[in-house]
Image (cartoon, rainbow, N blue to C red; front, side):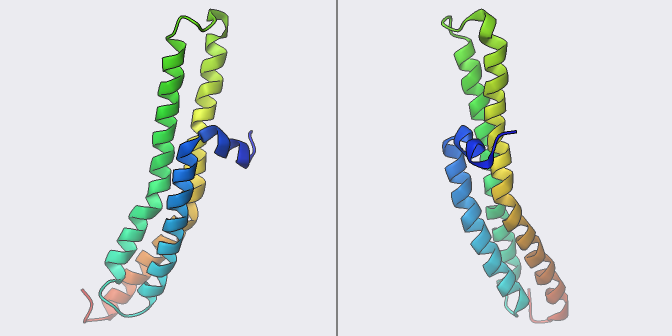
Length: 133
């Protein structure tokens, strides 16, 4: 199993996009949780927005994997690849492309956990507050 930094490198540019949205989703989920604990009309929509942003790194990871696999398949179609090495290249290439899913999942997980807590609080407090939406 590859180390975390190696997986990040193997994934390529989708790693950086996942990192960006992971950080943004984390902070937005913190804000959503704080807002959900207080009264306000924005707590439920903000929690749903935080959930959407928290899912982006996982989606970027899946997209990165598909793009990586497509690139491997494209290279294997060229006549310059040694026939005896095709299966090994496909195996290693697909393994590296799969790193994007792991990276996206790692960056999505903290924000998802906090956002689900924010959603639970928002809906629980919504029932108690007759002024809420």
